[in-house]
Image (cartoon, rainbow, N blue to C red):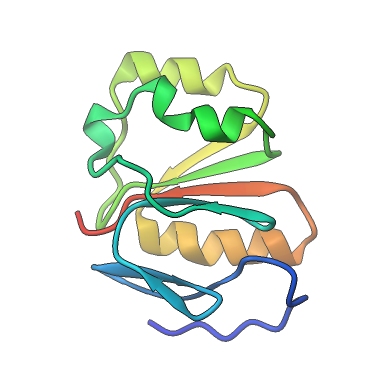
Length: 124
């Protein structure tokens, strides 16, 4: 799906997504990534939410967002219960959803001017 969003050019916006990719500012990414309005981790080595570990989100902890969106691939999958509980103790709000929903939600939150990060699993 292609998304058209009018925002400041200095922010990372999701401009399209599909089962095998997420496009950020028109650039197609085929591996999992973590996205913030002001930064991007292009090669996030998580391909399955069921094996997520808290250390996988250390990049986000450096500058915590208000909200973390975890996009878990083509369907909503929760990380292991112990990890989920630990993540809920972090200083950010946590939303777990499929990657397509996370892409749409990310753009809405950025448009509101709020601090958000999206950890997006691509290809699963």
